[in-house]
Image 1 (cartoon, rainbow, N blue to C red):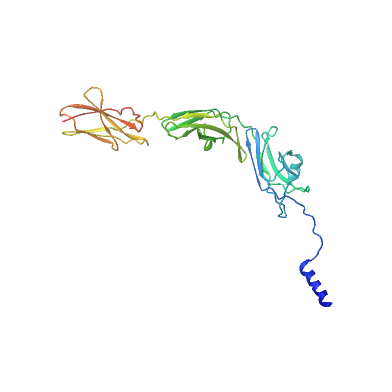
Image 2: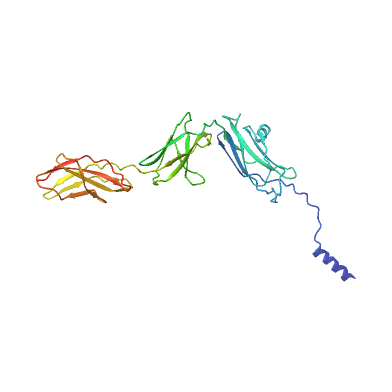
Amino acid sequence: MRTFIGALCLAAATGCGYVGAPLPPALNIPQRVDVINASQQSGELVVGFLITGKTTDGLVLSRLRSIDLRAGPAAVSMEKWALGAKQIPVDPPKIDGHELRLPIAGWENQDIVVAVRAVGPTGHAGAWSEPLTIHVVVVPGAPVISAATGPDGVTLSWARGNTPAGTKWRVFRKKKDDAKAAAIAEAAESQWLDPVTDENAEFVYQVQTLVPAGTRFAESERSREVSVVYKDVFPPASPVRLTTIAGVASIELTWEPNHEPDLRGYQVYRTEAAGALAKLGEVTGEVSYSDKAVERGKRYRYAVSAVDRLGNESKLSAPVEVSTP
């Protein structure tokens, strides 16, 4: 009998476990929101944040009762700020990323604080996120832009208007068939050069004004799209410093090199005495030419032009006269 009772005790000890005091119910307090950002875009504050779905005990939350998002003027403490801040509805209160747009009317030229916290299914709220302070400003309307092509690319221009010091402009570009434009530059002046040289390519541009707002920039709406088809109809610069040396049976010409990236070469022109200049020959890869078709005792006049790969030809250089001995 004692052996049987001992076996029962051993079974109880190994199979049933220890029965202690009951654990308190989980409070399901959501973790603090650590990912939050905000910016001013024209007449709205754009606020984004991420709810992780975890509790302060490391448990997983399946749902939330609500999300407490507030925005309002800065105060001496979070408690006083929360009492006076505007509560922004977040519906549905999902465990996921959120983005909301809040109108700035009534907040112009003020420091506005934005913070968020999650409220768990039992009604317990998590801690407030790091408060974000946004200095709200009056943002001008979208800039009106124009575009012009030139030998160096596409130049965008717009009116600066009554914008404060430190204002910048963000430039967006895409090719005609692209779905979305990408930000490619920020300009400190009301003009920007895109050194694009893709022959016959159509580009679409937009510009956005960035107004200083405290430590951030408030963004205007983007301008209307402006389309440009780039065509290279721009000749190189005229060659300079053409010099000649007369020999017994030739005249040697030299000049300064051009530096255009699409340069193909040079055309050499000649005439006798006061006649009209006529094309004599073409030079590629050199900045010199030897004219061996000359006669003794005659006076010649020379000029040189530059030509690009598309056949655009510059104006003639300043002519130079020389006589053979």
